[in-house]
Length: 260
Length: 297
Image (cartoon, rainbow over all chains, first blue to last red; front, side, top):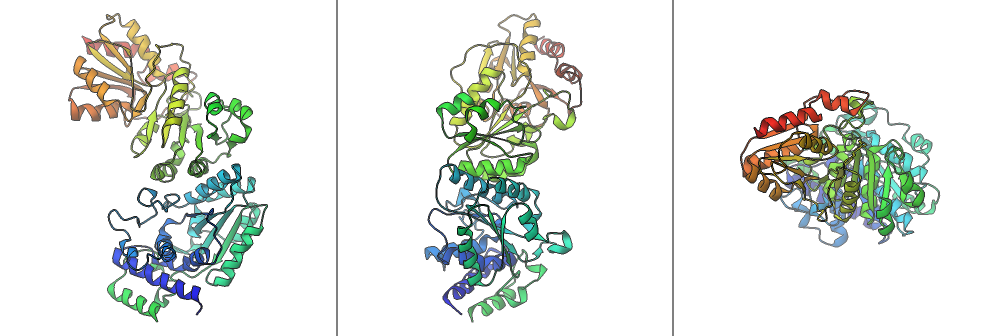
């Protein structure tokens, strides 16, 4: 296990700890998107001019854990998830946390806001990319496709959408609910550059992020195939772990697996 | 908008394919790099405006009130208000000003939607001159503003006002027997009704409550205490508009009966003119005059 993989495991441990203590949260998507976030924040990819938008706001336990690792404040602060007055709100809320670029939690909205930031940067010829993390369930929101059309029209090559394609949503498997596939073809038809990767292979993840910087004619989407609940065997691909409370037994079992 | 944009380079105009209906062509011609037509996609329009505001621009988004705020309430709630984003929302064709297009095109409940949102300020101008002042005021305000506009013709000109402010109002006529509060183009009908009521000039106090939220509490309480009777006239549903706001204020701070002349709990419908709809729903000059006389006697 290399250093980034170790870090990802520690982030996963923090996520379980935070959600258990909070009494509620979204472990499934937080665990599936962990490697994508670790790669982005620790893979030497982001510059200080870059902006990050967590459009799938419910994945915030993973994002908070990564930010705390980055600032070296991990260990205690993640325990404040969902506490009254805490900056670590159940979904990112700017009023409580200056590190939040835009408040999210209602799906589909962060992509448009990311588009607006990317456009603002272009208008003023400012450097830096806008990274937007989305989920596959979020792709069902019509607003996503409104944003997809307009970013392609503007050729916003400073906009990168990352889709955590874990294949599941609240009600079950995405493909049993509506037809998302062929997602790659859809984005290509909408005028985007598309990269498909294994969202748990940190090498592939970081390579894809580096590729994004090389494109200069269109917005880029990275469709990252992942496993819901990744890293905790009994949670993987289970409907039960989209959102909810973790029992003492589940918590201990998960922590044991993530500390070995 | 054009005048504002000349002095403030951060001002942008965004629309969801209603450039000509909302008279934005002049802006587009003068400032092509600061004008964006995002297509028929109001939800994305709001989100993009928020992103631009986060980059320190002052985006004015314009569409019809039924779509903005009507179609994108949640985008306004989360992306605009929960960011306290410096976005200005302009909803046109409010009330019955678009008489022909019927129920789907007539915004009669937009104030109710916007009043419930923390951080949101709401302005409703009476005529073209006031619209200009309130656009200027909206640009100065740091945070979300909803401007409710209309395409109704307003032939009357009313006195000069210097003290425009968020949370302000202006007294168009002072009086001691009845306070009449109104906003937007229907104020034209109110002023005509006051004129034809044959009551003495010192009887009726007419207040243009152009700031629906925050309300000019002080001015309204002061006037109500003086006259002891309040009438609200508005081209909006009886639920959620200025009438509700005034009733909420007075019932808690200075209880007294409030009469609300507004659109009953129904959607609009097609008509060949706005006048026909005002008559159907009791907002025409005759009915306003009758109500005033009844309240004063």
